Image (cartoon, rainbow, N blue to C red; front, side):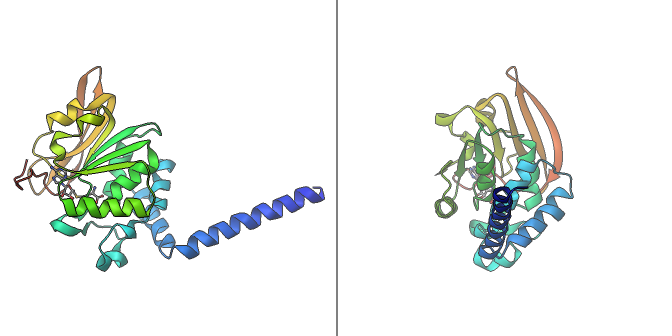
Length: 239
Ligand code: SAH
């Protein structure tokens, strides 16, 4: 090895080491987040590195209520405002993985809640459109998206049952509140070749259903029993 190659190698090693220690120092939750990925997500069979990296990167503690920050990386859902919940990390990962996202995909999310799922999606695809029925939650999550400088998330307050026709079709649709049947406007707004993941059924336990649109037809399979908050209309009635 000649001298300039040696200097270059040492310089690279130094830069890498300082970058690593910098990301660890500036984020006290770095180790907890990596542990969450390893023990809750990877250990349960999710292996797509792109998905795992999104979970290593997005700071879940920025999306939870202040009193729950110590539990931000625990293996459970947590309460957010308006009696709603941020889903368990593994469920967020399972649903994200099931959508098989490509970098160029446009995704619709129904039920913004804390905004955590939307941020994970924004790491993996081109654009995320997300709808939340409670104004307080929509405003709060928008603030977090701004603070974290996401430029590819568009959010609005409204009834997600109707989807967002102005931006359809979507390559993927993810629904994080449970209706008793799959909303027709959503299947209509799914692109050819598109995938939708949605919890369906009556309170308190539903089935997570994966739908795929091929040649205009929908194929449907149940993939996991789950427990989600209900999808509600603007009067608060369950769909
Ligand atoms: N994806 C969220 C999970 C939030 S829980 C997260 O990562 O935190 C589901 C959310 O769906 C709740 O915030 C609830 O208010 C919202 N919701 C219920 N019915 C809705 C509807 N018709 N349209 C849009 N959002 C709805």
